[in-house]
Length: 132
Image (tube, helix red, strand yellow):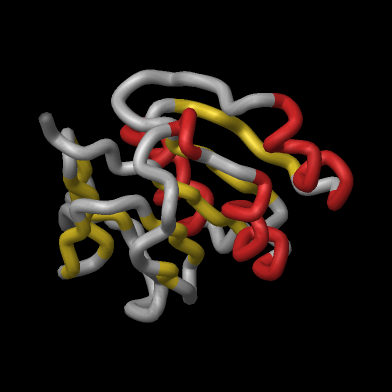
């Protein structure tokens, strides 16, 4: 009988990669920083205080910072529930041929972490709705 020493298996991530550590109503935490407003996150960039507070607030001009980043995949976290923006608002993404998915913010956070850990060029536009 041969015994093998147990080994911990964990995901090694460079310390420079932004990771979403927590999310919930009115809150998202990226690394050690907590935000009560919407943010855009990439592995190396954090755009604080992104304007939209609800998916219905999203305007085409709000997508400009995302187009500058040129992600391979864009995740749009729409708040507590999955809601889709107006098609006209997303026209800039279609025109720039940026692939995107719309999901609730919790799902966008989880998906972002997985793709960022894989080294993918991913951006997450996370809408943090105000708490009533």
